[in-house]
Length: 503
Figure 1 (tube, rainbow, N blue to C red):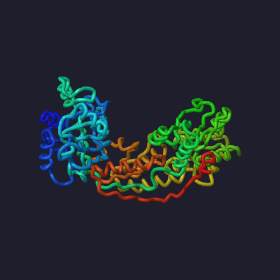
Figure 2 (figure 1 turned 45 degrees about the horizontal axis):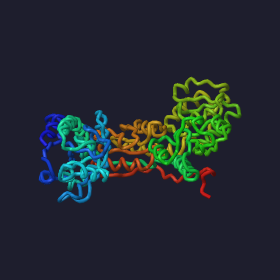
Figure 3 (figure 1 turned 45 degrees about the vertical axis):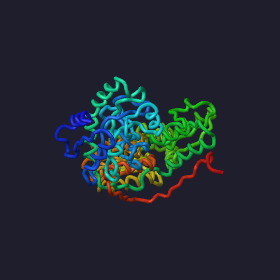
Figure 4 (figure 1 turned 135 degrees about the vertical axis):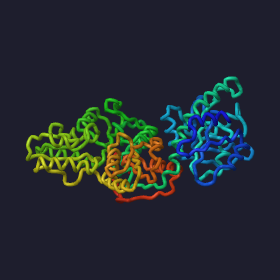
């Protein structure tokens, strides 16, 4: 409609930014949409459809925005295009809209040949579609293989009949949102086609310790049924925690939140002896999912402290792993988080001093601190093998090599994941722009503009599926080449605790 065109033009300005957007008014309905699609420029350039629509889902309100993850036609509509068009990058555009304060939903949009109300609206809603329009499926027919977007602002809703005076007021309210939609589409258009190559770092995602910890909770749920209580997050990843919570895991901060007699799992990051004693005093049945490499550090802490050393623990304050290690001998262990502390930390006897390292630190970060400690304490003793785990080291080496060839590096992992944050820092030290994102929705389209090569990795606690989602989104946005840099091949497997081993 002409009002939709005018509203979008207000959001774009004249001329449109970046020279990437050309506005075209198609008119209402499938016939006009088919005619407009025939005039669509050939090639692989991005195509976006924007306008207003009718809400089908009950939770949609006037002014809400629906970004289509799938566009399909009502099969009952005459000459309906076959199949459906998927848009794996929908979350990228949705994030840009949310940053502008809009209420955004991502899901299917269905196109019909007429306005729907009553039973027809209910029939389409039953298919899982969030919104219905009259043009998108026809306008986007034949666009597979090029960047596409479909954004619709909800006018009329499922809460009442379509044909009522209030509908005109709702249409005007929806039109007022379209200028904001246009501004987000500008970012999308600038990013579409900018990324040509995706360079994946390998190894990436889950390590053996994380796989073991997740398996402990899953096996406990299968054997004992929900709820299974987990002290702290089993691993530091929001998607993993959400998936396990959906299966019946209950995550608590401390043991006093666990009911008497309830099965309890200790997380992969380990716990202090005081926590184990509390569980024993309450006679809680416990399964220990501590990573064996963290268990090694705890054993070293006990050994060094037991022989009278002051133990210097290189690690980050507040992290669950360091808290657990400090708890092994709180009167003998000093935390050394940075070079400045390494210059000033005091020990009881410079001839009886040893060090340990948090397993998820950056290798070069720990090495710098350790150099200072060795200079100050020539008698400094250390563990027989490196404390920084193989998975942390391998992922850092891989992303260092990738970052040297990337305009932008995306590290997939949660903000509380130490090893994921270290990957960002390592990539930045290698000269790349780098960002930590939980998933696709955390990617800012503005980062992608001008980034021809994007490096991708994931922290050791991030599921591989999250990488697949990011690759699919960037490929849908126009990336043509996906290659992989392998720094190491991992074949480590840790045995499950006896409590959950298969008989």
